[in-house]
Length: 211
Image (cartoon, rainbow, N blue to C red; front, side):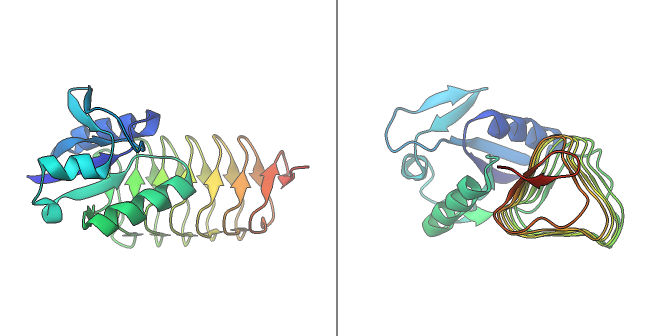
């Protein structure tokens, strides 16, 4: 059984704990929350370490320990990933809920998370550190970049391109052939009927730049 530690200890980190427990072939060593100081506590029966440094004191032979990204913010995930790699922890393979079906043509990078109810069709690529929360759907020939976050109920049509560090809010949708630019945010319930530029926050139906 492989060992894994969850970076973060907030809401999604605890949801990720449950997903890992559902997969069943991992030994969870604990959580590492983003604090510079603090005591080691417990969370759902697992140790909750204040820093990676505290964790490595308990596990000095940590070169074979995997880490996963228990955060929603793309920037936070990227920062967590950088620190964990600097310590020599190993990025985990994709974590996929047992009920999610995957066609052989789908390509998943490391530290991808597919939560319960996610539905993907064919010829889809998902980049490093990207998370699809509950009941997201992804259509054919869609390409998703690194460190993206999709809240529950996001729907990506076929032939969509999602660049790195994109956030899509709950129940938002993207129509075919649209591109979501680097670091953009699609608000909850918004519908992207055309491409969204990099760094833009877009809301509404149809989705338009906020402000």
